[in-house]
Each structure stands twice: as C-alpha cells, then as structure tokens.
Image 1 (cartoon, helix red, strand yellow):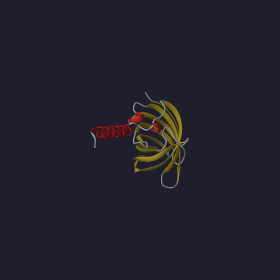
Image 2 (cartoon, helix red, strand yellow; image 1 turned 90 degrees about the vertical axis):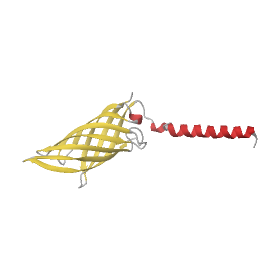
Image 3 (tube, one colour; image 1 turned 30 degrees about the vertical axis):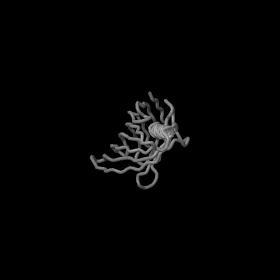
Image 4 (cartoon, one colour; image 1 turned 60 degrees about the horizontal axis):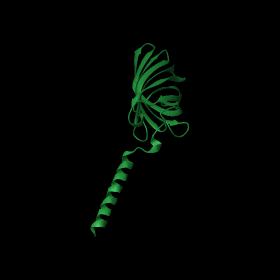
Length: 170
C-alpha cells in the first residue's frame, strides 16, 4: 500500500471515529424540549405500603406510588415517564392528607424531581399540587408546578390521574 493511500485510510478512520463519537455524545433532537411550556398529561398508578392505626378514627400510611405518565399529545414533556414516589398519608375521619416526593425518569434516562401534596376523601377524588425541584440532563434547572386530580380504579389500590403541568427551563 502506498504512503498516500495509507494516509487517506487513517484520515477516513479518524473521520468515522469523530462522527461516531459526536453522534453518541450529542443528544438526539427529539430528546430536547422547549424552554417553557404547558402539558396536559394522564397517568396510571399503583401503590404499596403499610397502614397503621394511630387513633380511634385515624390511620397513617407509609409507602410508594409507582406510575407512568403520557402527554395527551402523544409526545413532548412528561410523555412516557416512569414515576417513583415515596409518600405518607395521614387518614383522619375518611379524609386523606398526603405528601411525598417523586423521581420521574424519561425514556432517555433524564430525571425530573418533584415534591407534592394532596387531599381527598377515601374512595373519592384525590387532588393536589406538585412543585418541580430540579432534574438531570434536559431537566437541569427546571422550575414549575402542576395540579393533579386522581380517582381510584380497580380493587387493588390503582389510580388514574389527570395533570396539567407548567414548566420553565433556564
């Protein structure tokens, strides 16, 4: 092989390596989200925990809610996010007063962190607010809030929720 073709082979290999490295390190265009926006979202949930009686008409539940959310548009902010939300529920006279924290993970592995509070009647609607507290990757520095409304479905603690989220990125 001539010295000239050997140099071209080396240059070709370097170009392929550089382009390949860039394609791995650069986030895909569809992974980005607008710097601010609103999303209407629905989600399904399951909860598991332990309930203790702490008074005549009072119970205390400690556990975790797991869920998946879908943007109503079928894409965008909060679409196909897995949720993991440790929580506590103070149940007095059949009224639930709850709070917790969530880690939401999107299909790219980026995380959104949030804290929430909610209230509702046992067996009825459960509603509350969520405050975004930070994130990783595309959610770094995120701020925002959203409201949620949930209802029980099924016999085993499953929930169906609807949310409207407003967010802003730096």
